[in-house]
Image (cartoon, rainbow, N blue to C red):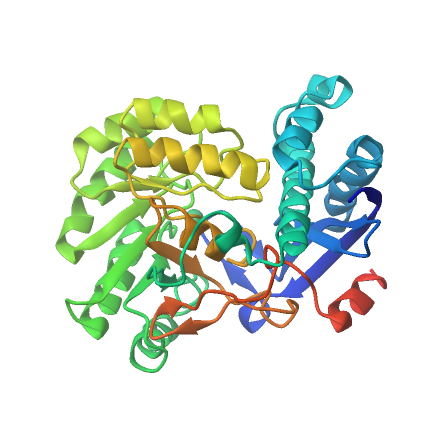
Length: 370
Ligand code: MG
């Protein structure tokens, strides 16, 4: 089995109600720039990054994947994915311009596509190729009811619907309003509506400075919050370590970290409790697995951030012993051939061979018009 060529793909999917916001970002579409990797036996592997659907940057990502990395893959056996990851990761012209950012996102998309090919060649869903079991329970928590631009009535009714109609037992709401007291009002309203047994996660998306994070972080105890996510700048190891000493609520982070080394530094410093690696931010499944093993060795739960809209992460969670809980956001479900399925608040193990990111025929037609 040999790789013959790569083709670029850019997918832009609309988000819920035409626009969502957290404390730092406001978007109308989710971007999935990536590649299709074609093999000489007719199989095609698909892998994507996750972006804010900005076409000029998405073009740079797919250009890096197809033009800088692509020639290194042609003629190679895609099943030798860890060897190929090393080959691409150490390719000196790309390494020289950065071990993060666009080059890393491009490598991540390629790595996912290679694992997709490997699983398809084996005729197995990725979780089974990685040694997982469908008997494992992977709970879903839902983020799509808790956006900061939802008025408080919408926030409460969405969270209530997710629990009462859709069967979720855990939801995440965004913090980081201009007035921190408004955050507490919103959180209090959701806690009152959902009752004491539903778990609530909170996420400030890096909005606060350290003293404000300590001040608000201490108040979260009143609302029995599972975690406080990205309270301050996402790469501030020392700040998160000091915050972890000052508040009772556990800290979650990792969605904006590019490297396994960065996770090592946070974990070693005691600056994170819930570890949130993202397969599309790290350089794919190969590096994600290193982070999950590392966190697991420190007895820290791995709860991935889903830049892939959980299509790949669901496989990883059915396979990795450190994962029992995974974020769910539905934005790519109409664009994927085998969208993630939730039943009674839990993921259903996918049965189709591959890593889960194959677009529908209709999506591929739309992609070609971008
Ligand atoms: Mg987050």
